Length: 119
Image (cartoon, rainbow, N blue to C red; front, side, top):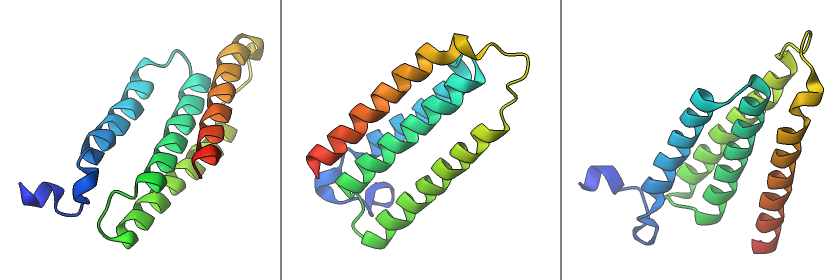
């Protein structure tokens, strides 16, 4: 099975599990979100957390692979942020979506605080 884990550092053997959980989390958010606002915000939070974990773990043997992976996830993050501008807000009571958005902001602040503390 060397072809599967050849580019992962031996001490980061668990990275494949993290990568699979990331893909599952993004897919689950798309399927199970109650509305588009929660879907976009939670997707942004998941991608941010994955980028932070990836930059801290540096799972690949080659630094260039780590950098390309982080840059591709950053491009996804930028795309998600820009996509929030195209969500139709007419005919929707935005007050109903304040509480979940507030929870996501608190989670984002918590994740950012953890990243700053670790650095």
